[in-house]
Amino acid sequence: MKKTNPVDGKFQVVELPYGQGDLAPVISAETIGFHYGKHLQTYVDNLNKALPGSEYEGMALEDIVCKSQGGVFNNAGQILNHTLYFTQFAAPKEGNVPVGRLAEAIDKQFGSFDAFRAQFEQQGTGLFGSGWVWLSADAEGVLHITQETNASNPLTKGLTPLLTFDVWEHAYYLDYQNRRAAHLAALWQIVDWNVIESRF
Ligand code: MN
Image (tube, rainbow, N blue to C red; front, side, top):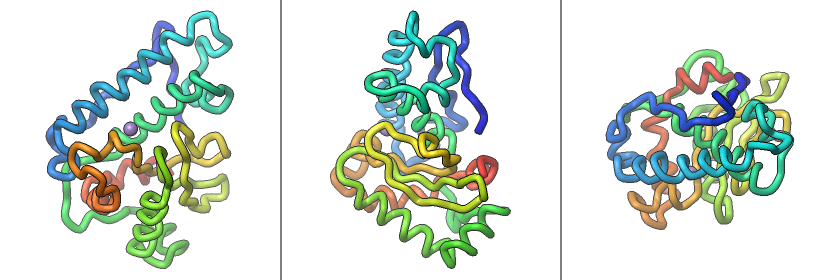
């Protein structure tokens, strides 16, 4: 995958490819305000404070995620996870389905998009505590659905991350309270499959 390099020693919050209210009602402007504006900003600020003088100074974000542990890993992992997360969405669309080679791979491997979707939602709903559910590809182009706890990313297992749903409560609590499954089921309306396909 493409590497994210620091600029003047600092990482930045990724730009949103949509307006803060454009994902409503699936994700409200208020949730984007806290999740993107506060949570992600804090991870970026914390990592930028930890880097000067450390062995990770000047490294690409993806390399820090693969090589670090502890606080550096937690913040770098969450920056990478949220960068992939926030750049994979677009305004809600009815009948929103995968496109291109990825659509073919999903059908071939999971039987149908509906079967894939059910398995992905089940993994997200079943993840205990905070974390992420991922669709990734290995070097042979085989697709994998995995659960990652806390700040982890499938990149650390040699997989290429394609799509992710954030199951930390901060991702859905304002809009869905404890109804994680309802939130995950709604997210399919805003997945930008052209972006996901371009990562494949
Ligand atoms: Mn989050």
